[in-house]
Amino acid sequence: MKKQDFNVQGMSCSHCAQTIQDLLLSMDGVEDVNIQLDTKKITIEHQDPLTTEDFNHVLKDTHYQLSK
Ligand SMILES: [Cu+2]
Image (cartoon, rainbow, N blue to C red; front, side):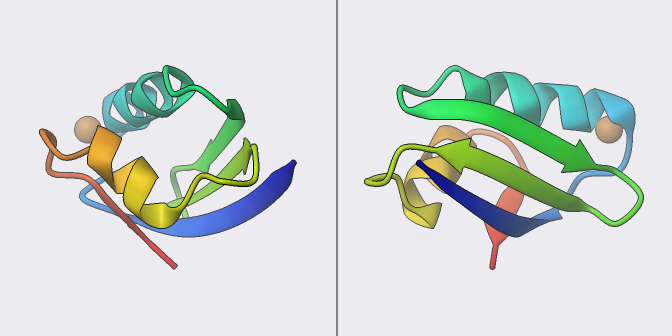
């Protein structure tokens, strides 16, 4: 298990945060998602093989993007 922090682009309200959380939690291997709306940061607890690209692939049809 791995815990990684990302910055989130395009997130401005709690509705955005909920959408992002639901999409990420729908991924195989994602165990927990914690979003801090005020700092626009996200912590993802997940199984090892998943990468930033995998997370952004799930968000590809939205205007949200994760970066390190
Ligand atoms: Cu929003």
